[in-house]
Image (cartoon, rainbow, N blue to C red; front, side):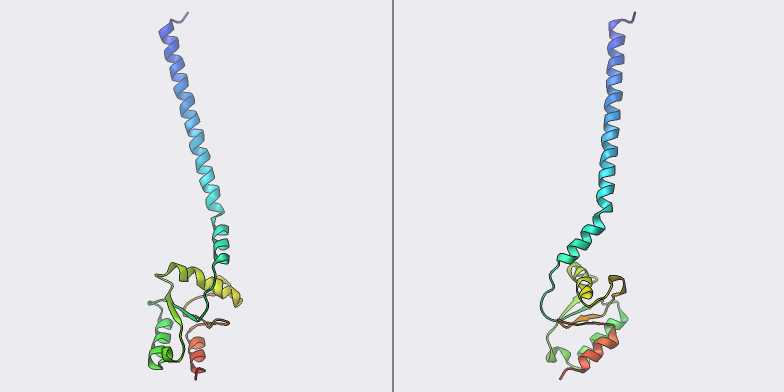
Length: 142
């Protein structure tokens, strides 16, 4: 027959093992929950994009490192376009809201997000993508 201190020690060790197993199961469960929530986040991001409201007015989306954007900016400057019409310029590389807004507006014009790029101009009704398209729009201004 085992003496009482040995039995107590075994009981304590068994309790520790049980606690470690329970902690492992809880940790594993948390990892699974986090993984599953991460798997659904693209859908959540899509829902956020759909709820973004499009502000009124004209918007030019651009990037300072984009060569086509530089051509549009040069045309705007050379032809005093800002004196002819008012529009907001938004750099998608530093403006997270602009980065999220551009695909929402693109969808209104029938563009798939993967086919969008800068420069991108929204006149309030129609989308213009690429330097030639945007410059041609500006050429129609009085």
